[in-house]
Length: 102
Image (cartoon, rainbow, N blue to C red; front, side, top):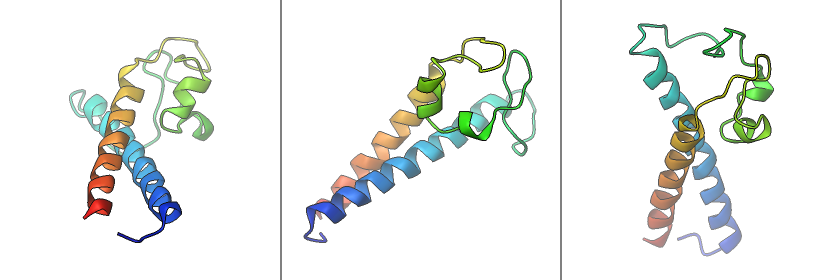
């Protein structure tokens, strides 16, 4: 659509980042809503209750960097979190690619 492969690539990267961020929010909704918890406030470890540091709350990257474990108590963090984030990111990339091809 824009004619430049570099711009198209940047648009797809932006779509992916936006998608993983939305996926991260979807994880919050899926986890907190059934438990009757507030949608606001900082994320915390489901095992030890420590607040998740900002640097440990980057979609997908933090899960990989921490080896899928809480920094504080070393309890495992479900693979579901990065899976939802990645899936949402890839869906956004697919939609972006289709829109760019129009």
